[in-house]
Length: 255
Image (cartoon, rainbow, N blue to C red):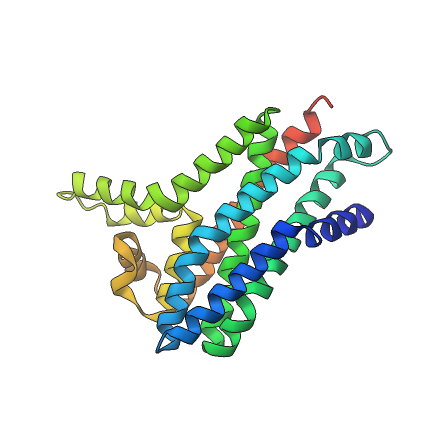
């Protein structure tokens, strides 16, 4: 597993798209903190970009990489290597490389300009988002052998979590505003990893006005240390569940 992991990680770190991804994140972060008059505004601006670009790049790059690695995977399967090890090594290599690119791009300026606690929270949530959407990419790529369909599923997942989810929750709330549905809205918030990450950062910055409706309710219920622990637990589940489903299907796939 170590050899496969090392090969995948080095291959991705030499990839021009990943290098460009890290450079663009770094340029944007440095420019943002240089132009904003306060560190909090800079963090919010970086956060908005991170919530859109990190999931999109992670899910698209990982999906395409898995499809392009089909011949390499078939070659590994023909050797006495357990299928589970192959899939885990690919997932770990992809996740760690993209997380490293994110930390290099965003980490240095955020650690220099923002306070340490906020910077660490932004880096932690961005890293979780990266791994979650790599896991979703593995799930998308194992659902169908057709590359175009797999990429389409990945884009739809990103559209749903990044753009449609909060609007859908808000629509449901207004439709059932006569009923006490606050607890239901809190539970719905757990169904979107992007929403969870945004709420975690905004709770930390105490910017309740920018949390959106789901975030405001979430704050009332989980604006404590236990709420943070629960939120990170939910993010961890978002990694484990899609990856385990993809792993099970990969072990049964006829290659």
